[in-house]
Structure formats: C-alpha cells, structure tokens
Image (tube, rainbow, N blue to C red; front, side, top):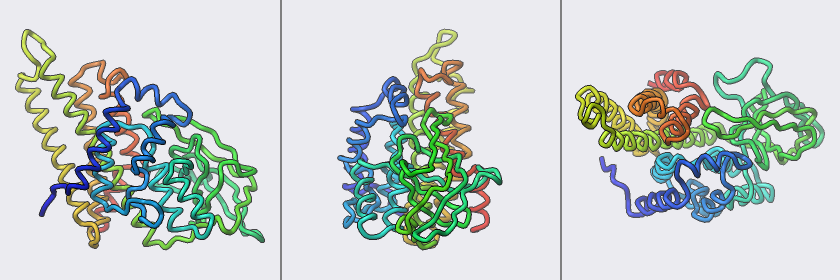
Length: 360
C-alpha cells in the first residue's frame, strides 16, 4: 500500500507550510485570538486566495475537487502551524452542507461567498452529549416556510458569522442569516481561546428556500470528511508539540547534562513516539479507504484513538517543559488547549469509540 504523497499533494502541503511560516508564531497566534471572531480577517482572505477553503468542493462550484488525502494533508499542516482560522467549521463543513442542500440563486450566492472568503457560516445543531433536554430548536410550519423557536448553546466559530445552519428538533436543517429578526447571538470562548456563539430563536421566520434538502448518505459523508479533518489537525498538533519538546530536551540542562540524556525521559519519549506513529498510521489507513465501505469506520476509528491519546501526549509534553509548559507563552500550552477542544467536539472520544465498535 503506497502512502507517499503525489506531486500535487506535496505542492499543496508546501502552500500551507509557507502560509504558516509567513503568518504564524506564538505571539501572532495570541494576537489573532483577540481579533473580532477570534482569528485574523487578513489571514482568512489569504486562505481563500490560496484555495484552501475550497479543497473538497466540486470544480463547477469553484472548488479544487480534491480527495480525502488532500484534505488530510491540508489539515495536518494547519495543525502543525496551530492555525486559529476556522477553516473547517466556518467554510468547508457548512459549505458542503450548503452545496448539497440548497438550490438555485440562493445556493450560488452562499456557496460562492463561502469559497471566496466573503461569507462565513457556522453549524448550530444537535451534537452528542452536549445538550440538555431543553436546549433545542422547534420548527413550526408556516405558509411560506417555517418559524424557529428555542436555543442552541453551541455554534462553533459562530462569532461574526454571516449565517447559521440550524438543526431543528425534528432533524430538519435551515439556513438562518445572522441578521434574521428574532435571532439573538451571544459570543463566548472555548478552552483554546477560539470564539463560539450561543443562539436564541424567538419566532425566527425562515423562507422555504432556506430549508436544506440533503440526503442522509450525503450528510454522513460530509461528517466523515469533517471527522477526518479534525483527526488530521490533531495529528499535526501532536507532531508540532513532539518536535518542539524534543528540541527542548536536547538543549535544556539539569545537573550538568542535557535532560534528554536521562534514561527515564528517553523511555517516555519513545513510548510517545510510538503512539504518535500509531495515530499517523490510522489516519493513513482511513484516507486510503476512501471510496470503500471502510472509509467512515476507519475515519472514526482514527478520530477516537487520536482524541484519547492526543491529550496524554499533551500532558506529557507539558510535564517535560515544567510549569511554563501550560502557559500561553509557549506553543505547547496553546497546542494542548486546542487538542482539548478537538477531542471533545462534536462528541466525546468514547462516543466516537462506541460508534466504531458498533460498526465492527
């Protein structure tokens, strides 16, 4: 089985790595998180110009028409750079829902806007283990569409979004513009400092054309691609944290010698390296299964393993650095907080593991 990247995939990887080199370091990342929406608007425009918001979209929509391997390559590189721009949650994931669920001029306006970086959309729907019984949205049929009432406390990357894909209690999905009458948006931050939003719906009228008509099997594939992107980003962050810690162990001295020469430290790093390579192998197994019945199962298996073991690796990297490892002064602390969010969204690791076990 060949896991080597093609020439085009190597070029795509190089594009992302150049973006990271030109726009990111520890201090810049902290600065971006303080901007409106929790990321850099300038960087968002650059990502759109590079085509990174359009990787899995059809060429007819202005996308690159690339496969799961390319998507994984992009998100591993974004993870290594610990990029805060919500490429998945504000562009690729909601954009795919819009591309498959809308029609006519409305579809063209929103999909084109998302791929060009001019519009951002966030998902606000039911996700496993994150809602209380009263945290739901009810859709009531109206003459020209539906009326929404209720709440959704989680709309990841929803701050400064132009619209939301809202999941109602009956499973239906609606595109709701951020300026819709009766919609109240409150921004707050997740553990990694990125922005999200909670939504309150009070008789929000939604036209019939704004209801997404999407087949269950299509929605399942979109969610599988999202799970692969999250697993790949987590793998990239783990790579970056491991490499930085390895460099630190080779330079930091204690008792007159490099701490990386202590046998106990070497044993711990060797075990973590083996775990890191297991994570990489699981992601590669998933991407080569694209187009087969195993793709979804292998993807969720990789996601479950990485969600659990990434936090263990993060804890170890922090301990290697001592007390300063948990602070935002180092990328170690920033990366661990991001892994914490990735491991819990959109469902806890054990929920994904249960899904994988049931498939087996």
